[in-house]
Length: 140
Ligand SMILES: Cc1cc2nc3c(=O)[nH]c(=O)nc-3n(C[C@H](O)[C@H](O)[C@H](O)COP(=O)(O)O)c2cc1C
Image 1 (cartoon, rainbow, N blue to C red):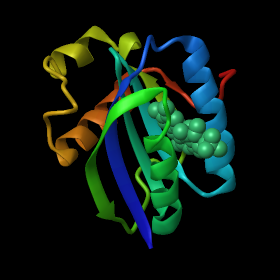
Image 2: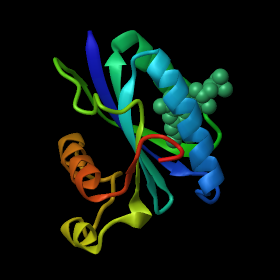
Image 3: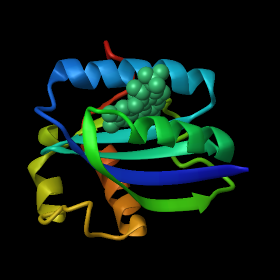
């Protein structure tokens, strides 16, 4: 059974390029090998990540990510069974919230992933994917 989860978390310390690259490198290698797809939105001190895949695999991955010392205040904001993947193109797409087009910032003026619902967050992620800089590989 396929599921999709979305969680939000707060970075511990600055979100440097080195840290982001390290997370993405691990994520893209492990996720491709384990049929996990998703997107990691990152910036302004927060991470917002959607993970899709087999329920048992996603659950174990989430508990590993939850325990990761690079972030804290990890809150699950959405979990559903799915028929189809929404982010199937990406082992882990990356959207930098800092690179956003100003019009997207205007569309989401009070973006606070801790206080909006999962469905709204998903709509927001889709907007971010459409408008933001999506980087799949580290070199692209
Ligand atoms: C915000 C964030 C997102 C992450 N996303 C993933 C991911 O999608 N896939 C993955 O394998 N590891 C991801 N990681 C890394 C894991 O937390 C963990 O470091 C990695 O799975 C190695 O686990 P281990 O040290 O227990 O072997 C993420 C870490 C952070 C902080």
